Image 1: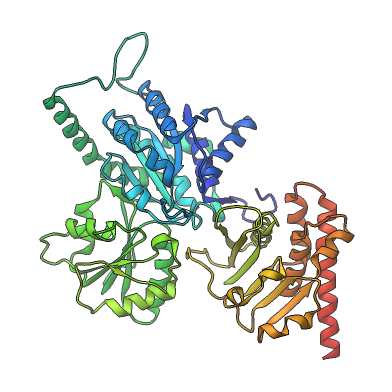
Image 2 (image 1 turned 180 degrees about the horizontal axis):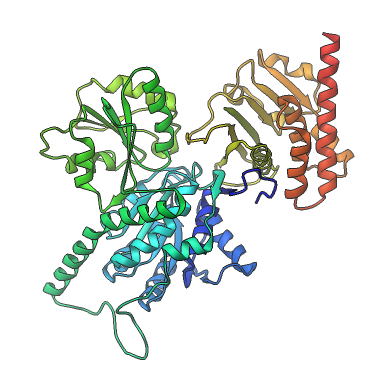
Length: 389
Length: 186
C-alpha cells in the first residue's frame, strides 16, 4: 500500500486487510464468505488477492452466512484447511451450525468482527455477538490491533488443526477492523515454517464411503462431549506454544493471557480486545501519578484459562473488569466468567464489574484513570455498574 | 501526538483523505492510526475520519476528544457538535465559499475558510475536493511537507493524478500566501 515508506518492513493496513493477508499466508484450500459490515473488507481483499493471482484458495460466495458455515463444515470434513469470516447478524444466523461444526470436530478458522446485534440497528464495536456463542464449542480468541489480528489468524489454524476444534478470532468493529496502522506482513517462508500444510486424520472421502454426524445413542452423544472436553483441555497449552513459537520467528510473542505492568499492582484492569490498548495508556498515566495499576488482557476466552487467571489475580487487592458487552439480566460476560473462575479463592481481589463501552460508546484513557481512582478502594458490588464519560 | 479529525458526507472522500494524510505522516517516519466511523455507509450522511500520528507506537483505540486539527468538507456540518472536539489552538480548515468573517460567530476558534470547490473546478477536478482540502490542511498545520503529501496523492489517486496534485498544490499555496499576508499585515 505504501512504497514511499521509510519503514521498509511495515505496510499500512487496516485490521480487516491484515486478516486477509494472514489468511493468504496460511493458504486455506477453501473459503466460503458472505459480506456484512464491518467484515466486508476481509472478503473484498481476499477476492482482490485472488483476482491478482496471489491467492490459490477456492472462494465461494453463497446466499447467506448459514450456507457459508454449512459449506465450511462440509469442506473441512473432507480434510482440507478452511477459512470464513463474518460479523454480528451473520454470526447469529450461523448459530445452529456453530454447534454442528464443533460437534463434528471440523477445525475451521473463522474471523468475526465484533459488532452490535440488532435491534436497534447499529454498526458499533460490542462483543456480545461472539460472547453469546460461548457455549457452542468454538475456541475464542480476541485481538487488540491489526498486527495481532494478522498474527493470530495464522496461529488459529495451528491451534484448530492440532485440537481438531473450530477457532473463532475476534476483533472490534472500526477501532481495529477499519483502523489503518503499520503492520508487518511476515514472509511466506516464515509462515510455512510455523504452519505446515494440513494433514487431516479421519475425514470424508467418496472413495471410502464414510459418513459424519449420523444419529447415535445417548451414551455416544455424551461421549462426544467428553471428547470435546479433552480437546478443549489442550487448547490453553496449544495457544501458549503457538504464541511462543510465533514469537521466536517474528519477535512478537502471545499467550492465553497477557500481563502489563501488574507487578505490585494495587488495581488491575481486566478486559479484552481493542480496549486493552487504551488501558495501557491509562496504566502508564496512573503509574506516573504514583498509582500502582496494571492490565490483565484476556486473549483466550474459550476455553477460559481459569488456572492462569487465578494465578494472575492472586493477592491483587482490586480488579476492575471493563466489559464491552451486556448480557441483559446478568451483566458483563467477562465479569460473570471471572467471578466463577475466582470462586472460593482465599486471596481473590475485590472484583468490580463495569459496563464500559457497551454499544461502542467512547472509553478514553482519562476515563479509565478516573475509574481506577474511584473504584480501587470501593466495596465491590456483585451487580454490574454502567459507567460513561 | 497529533490528532486530526476530518468530517464530510458519505461519498465526498473524507475517508480517502484520512488514509492519504496518514500515509504522508507514515512516509515521514511517524507511527500512524486512522479509522473511519459511519452510521450506515450511505452517500450524504456524515462520515468522520480520525487520524493519529506520533513518534511512538499508537496504542489507544478510542475517539479523539480534542483535536490538534479539524478538516470540514462541508460548511453545513461545521456546528457546535463538531467544534466541541476543538479548542482555540485547534487548526480548523473548512471547505466554504463564504468569507472568513462569516465563521466568527461560532466562537473563539482558529477557523480558516478555503473554497475547495473553486480550486477543484479550476484544476479540472469537478466537485472532487479532497486533494485541494488536504493541500489547505497541510499548509495550515505546516506538516507534513507538501511534496510528501503530493507524492502520496499521486501514488494513490485512482484517476486524474496530475489534476489532483495540482489542486493540492494550489490550495497549499493559497493558504500559505494568505497566512504570510496575515503575518505581514499583523
